[in-house]
Length: 124
Image 1: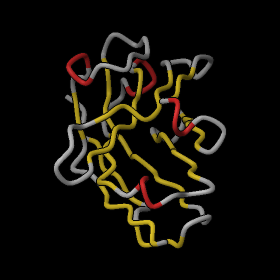
Image 2 (image 1 turned 180 degrees about the vertical axis):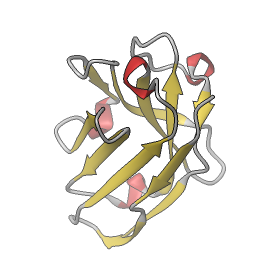
Image 3 (image 1 turned 135 degrees about the horizontal axis):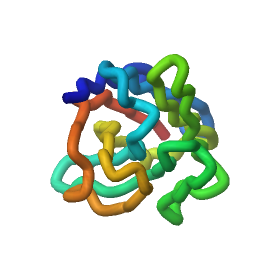
Image 4 (image 1 turned 180 degrees about the horizontal axis):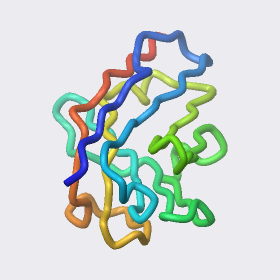
C-alpha cells in the first residue's frame, strides 16, 4: 500500500512558476512509475507528465512540453513537477499517482494509487 501526499500548489500569475511535490509512504516507492494528472472544473482528469521507476524515461502532454519538468528522488520517496511559464489554462487540481508496473503510461486506469490533489490557480 502506498499513500501519496501532494503539496506546493497555490495562486500564481501567468508566466510564473510553481513546484509541486508528491511524498510517498512505503518502502517500494522506487519500483513505481509516477504520474501527474490534473482536473479542471467540468473537465475530465488528464495526464500531464510521467516518469518511470528509474527516472530515465519521461513523457509529457503536448501542451506542457518545454514548460513542465517531472523528476524524482527515490532516496526521499518524492516526485516533483516543476511548472514554468504557467498559463491560466493550467488552472486545475493536480494529482500524483503511482503505477506498480513501473513503466510510465498516460492512462489514469493503469495507476494504482492516488493522492488527494493540490489546487493550482493561474491568474491572467
